[in-house]
Amino acid sequence: MQNSLYLIPTTLGENWANIPQEVKDLASNLDVFIVENLRSARRHLRKLGNQKDFDSEVLFFELDKHQSNFEGLFNFINEQKQAGKSIGLLSEAGNPCIADPGANAVELAHQLGLVVKPLVGPSSILMALISSGFNGQQFTFNGYLPIEDKEKRIALKKLESLVYQSPFTQIFMETPYRNEKLVDEMISILRPETKLCIAVELGEENEFIETRQIKNWKKRPNLHKRPAVFVLGK
Image (tube, rainbow, N blue to C red; front, side, top):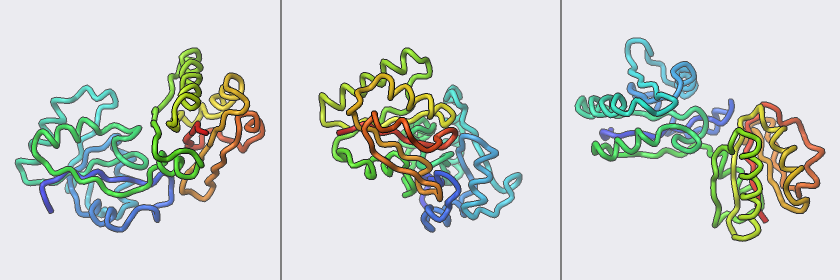
């Protein structure tokens, strides 16, 4: 195994069959990890098949959610490199570094000369895009929209304008407990004929994916607290 930083995907929900066996094997053999949340990371690693003693056999570095401990992260990666260790960067859901912290770890790995190895796993963004019926050749992922209502409405109108003025499909996300409010806001401020795809619980048993015009989204399944991706296109 090369002295590497492995970008380890996890499931988008509870369907661990979506994770390739190669990823499970690698995650089971590594004993150094950079994680966003220690508790959930341990649970994910058990699901991936890692049977090591997490208290004595595995070393974890927990990412600061504000990404302020840059020096500590640098020292941790450098120490592991000097010890000849490979590191796993573990996502909370889907792939690391997309709507997920971890980019600093990848940046430092490049600076320190580690091999960066991305691994294949489910991506809610790509799954929503390819099932939307919109342009998959030119698209923009906008991450999470602003929390403040006024700023959010401005952002939504801007994304809609981009759909009509350019060929780019516009993809974004919301905190699950705000899904219903977001859709209500889109219905109230976007053009009735604008097309919206809502992709919910992708890859899971209760998966829901539909593309409709805004005017047809008043009747919809319950989206509250269900992980979702939203796509505007034409």
